[in-house]
Image 1: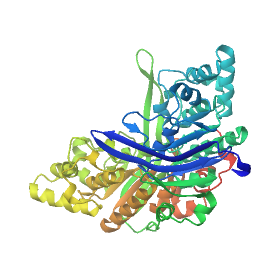
Image 2: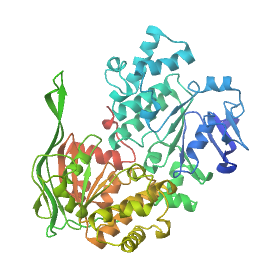
Image 3: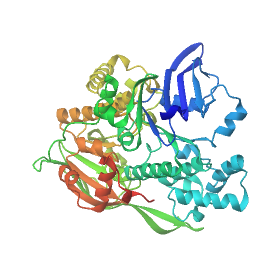
Image 4: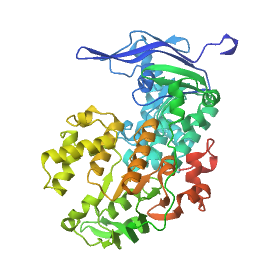
Length: 544
C-alpha cells in the first residue's frame, strides 16, 4: 500500500493439510495475498483448487483436526490470527470480518425467524437487544433491498425466495459493519437477474462502508464486474495475480488462459423448418390445486405452465430460459408425461396426452432426460455399468449380458469416459465425469428426444464447455432433438436453435435463438440478457 501503510489483510505462505487415516492431503500450498481497505480481491479457480479452504483459514473455521497449517501467517490490521486464542477469534468473527456462504438455505437456521438470526449477532457483538436491536434489523433489511422489512421479521428462511435469503445473509454479515467481507460464491445458486441485483448491492454497500471484500468464485463474468484485483488458484497454489483489467487483457499463466477461454463456444445448428417435428404441444397447461380448510377444498391453482405451445424438430435444440419458478422444468416433465397436464402432446406423430404409465413404457426408449445434479440422480449403490445398462435391461430384455456390456462400453467411450472404469461407483468420479455418465445413461438407448434440465449449472466453466461440446457432437452424430432448460444464457446461446423465454408459467417471447439474442423484443428478455452478458449491469435491474 502507498505511503508504507499496512494492508488490512495479509496472508503469507499459508499451507493447509488434511490428515485422515494416516494419509495427508496438501489442499493449500504456500499461498500469499493481501487486501487493502475498500478493495475487492477475487480468488478464482475450479472446484478443488483450494479457494474456500484458504478463505475459511482466515477465520479458522476449518475442522481442526483433520485440518492443520504447517506454514503460514495471517495478519489482520497487523494482528496475527492463525495462532490467536479462541477468545480473540470470537471478537473478529462476525464483528471485524464477516462471511457470506454460497447456499443461504443451509447457512440460515430453519427454526429461527429472520429477526432472531440477525438479532443474535447484534446482541453478541454490540449488546443490542429489544427495540434498539429491532430498529437496527429493520434498517439492515431495508439497506439490502428487502421490501417492507417490518413484515419479514417473523419470516422463516423457507418462506423467502432464494434472492431474499441471500439478502438476509448479507444483512447478517453487515450487521456489525465489518472491515472485511468474505463472500464465498455468493451468487452461484441464484438466477441471472437476482445475481445482478446481489452484485450491485454488494458494490453499493462496499462503497458506503469502505469495506474490503474477498470474493471467491469460478464465474469470471462476476470477477470482471466487481473485482479490483484477481488471484488465480490451481491445485492449492496461486499461479497468477494481477489487476483485473490487466489479467483479462494479458493472462500469462496457461491455466488462466484456459479459464478465460473456457466459455462455451461454437454455433448451434441453424433453425430448419423442413426437419421433421419430433415433439409438439399446443396450449399445454399444468395447474397444481391449492387446497385449504378441514375438507381440503380447492380454493385456487398454481399455474406452473399456462398455455405453452412448443415444436421441437429433429437435429434441433429448443432452449427454454427463465428464472426459478418460471415453469421450465415442469414443462419438460409434462412433455415426457412424467406429470399430468392438459392439452395435446404429439410425440413422433402420436398423441400421447392420455397415455398412462403402461402405454408410455415402449416410448421411453425414444425420450430421455438428463438432470441437473448427477450425484443426486445416480444411485450410489450401483456401479457405472449397472446404471448405464438399466434402461437396456427394461427396453431390450432379449440382449445378452455380453451385448449389453459391449454397448455400455461403446456409449461410455462416446461420452468421453474410459470403459475400464465401468465397475466403479459414482462417488469415485468428479462432477463433470458424473454428468458424462448421466448423459451415457440417456444415450445408450439411442433416443430421439432428450430433455436436458440444467445439465451444466453445477459444473466448473471449463467442464461446462466440455459438456456443451459433447452434447453438440452427440446431437450431430445421432440427429437428436434437444430441449435444453437453463438459466445460464451463455450456454443456451451456444446450443439453442430456437428459444422460449418463460416467466411465471407463461411464454414471454419465442422464436429463432439468434434473433432473440441479437434483438430481444420484450423488456423481461432484455433484462435477462443484460444481466447475463453486460460486464457492467445497470441499476435498473436492482430490486426484489
